[in-house]
Image (tube, helix red, strand yellow):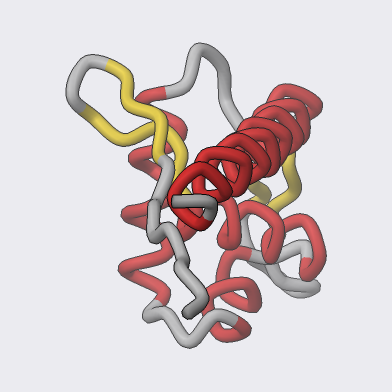
Length: 112
């Protein structure tokens, strides 16, 4: 019989979610596409929901996580700040280390 541990990790600041898997996916999609609109579309989110998530991250973070440019002839855009990239990287590392720890702990159950 194979056991699995189920868990979700998120980081809060003053009872507001700073980062979680969904927010990190959105930030990575913004970095990949250069646009909040395109990022939302790629994740099957409404633009409004994506904007709310991004706004929540920016309000909870110590510094802005994105640089946004207003649309116009060539369209607007968004990209991660260095701080935003560092947050995403740190969250990924925390998440990876947490799963490694949980896998080790699960071995205790499997040995019983």
